[in-house]
View 1 (cartoon, rainbow, N blue to C red):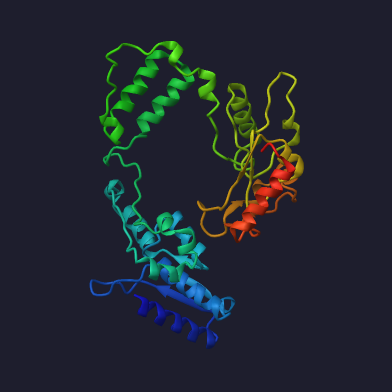
View 2: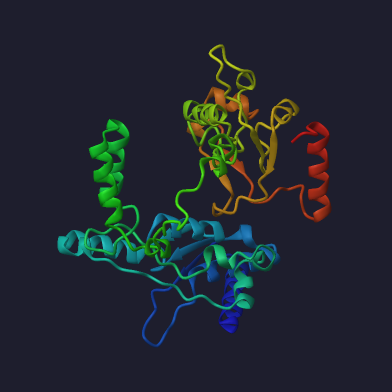
Length: 359
């Protein structure tokens, strides 16, 4: 495979030198005798090779692939350097499903070949540093709900009955929810384990940790204002403050009016303030109004250019909190552009502690 990748790079370099400004990578020639190079590996290898010879901006990489079948896979291709994509197998599948409706219920699992780490490093030079193999180069098997497919923990019946119970609060609706939830067992190892009553009887109540102590360990996930509506973001903070837990602001900043208690006694300030790569909304006032500071080291869960907030979601409020203009798309880079060593990270921690020694 290494030999084939080297040949691909030479072909791409030669084409660019001949003023070809559109390079098409295709796996249409796949057959029983011809195994294709994984498309992500091919894209990344050529992309970085052209970067190294300073020719990347001279040509666009167009992908014609049967590997890309859903939005997630297409996003990764763009993240690895593709300019445009023709997912021919996806198109063919849609045409076949339309022609034969009975195939819509068919369940298929797709897998891709995973090369060794040394070869993988050609397509992603950051592989060894960030161990990205475990993140996006495992075999790609996607489990989606199918009426006649395997059982999962959260089925449509479980979710439907859960919502019914939450809205009504009736004991019989709760029993119905539990009935459907138990039908999914066994799914995990814990489903095969039962509670064994203590031989000494119930635990004395005075030995049980108080509810208030347990709730202090409750936290919300870091979800930025922008990803969540202002109302939802604020409600999470109020709820955590009421029970003594901790909400996380995420990376989108926080309205300063929330840093003081409301007239009704509610406190909408997020206890945990996040400092991410885009530093959106980070100011001295933002930092001092935190009980805990969290540094998000990377935008690992998002392909390509890190976290993205589309321009149409950047309204006047979000623009004010993030120190930008309404309608402007906001991108948080995958890494922090001022952290390239342990010493750089130590410097950021030092600076944050200088602003907020309690954080």
